[in-house]
Image (cartoon, rainbow, N blue to C red):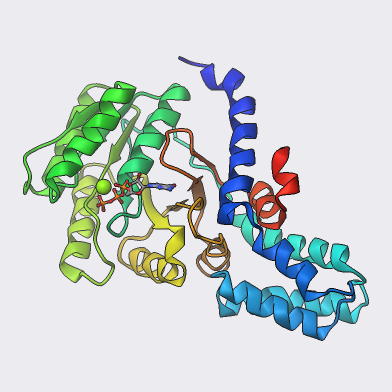
Length: 324
Ligand SMILES: Nc1nc2c(ncn2[C@@H]2O[C@H](COP(=O)(O)OP(=O)(O)OP(=O)(O)O)[C@@H](O)[C@H]2O)c(=O)[nH]1
Ligand SMILES: [Mg+2]
């Protein structure tokens, strides 16, 4: 099992980049399309920047973050560095990369955590359980032993959904009956993982809105119960965000972070109607590490977040989506 990824990764990754380009906003790049349309004569002036500003806001980038990007471009314009579309595109690419690069921090599983615990949280349907399945596969491919905790005791089907992922990947799933205390289930799984020397325990939780105080407290309790036995645990509290929720995803991130102290974010469903712009305010305003991005329902439709790759995909046209 060790080293399997070493040989497989490059091909897998190339395929992912190609799919990311094709699927992000369904292959129709809003930025490139708008840019050429905005400046038909190829001349860059204040009006073009104003139109670009509107396009960025429409694409979920948010007002503050858009202002930061436009202010940077305005400076370049004043210095006469934006002579044509290519220069504008290059300036935009740099502005986006400057914002995204600092948060592209991969999830690193520290050795000897016995176990390293990942607590998955987020609103209903964001993609938590699916992300757990994808992550379990990835960690196994990297040579880690993995166990899953069925902490969503609210939905009857949730345990089965997790078990299906577990069976597919040959990973043990610790579960109890519907209605059980999620903190008890997760702690049970923690003890099981400890005694079996498992490297990584990934705990599922039921979806909840950031406004449901009682349910948010339930997550705080899970965190507290784990920390009582190991102050380092949970090592990762990962928020799963559905990119198609736009600015609402930003609100979720702020509230979950306030309540729990997030350590990482995974953004899913970038293959849907999402324009991908939501990653920019997340990076600019929260500065939390973005671990993975998801572009589909299959196990290999997720990769660590790579800022350059992502900006390329945002700015690419259908033509460039062919290669990688
Ligand atoms: N297109 C697409 N669909 C996804 C992605 N990630 C998850 N999904 C789908 O989104 C739906 C919800 O995913 P779940 O993993 O069940 O979401 P959840 O957060 O566990 O939901 P609850 O447990 O109900 O809160 C499922 O149909 C998934 O297949 C993605 O990256 N792209
Ligand atoms: Mg779920």
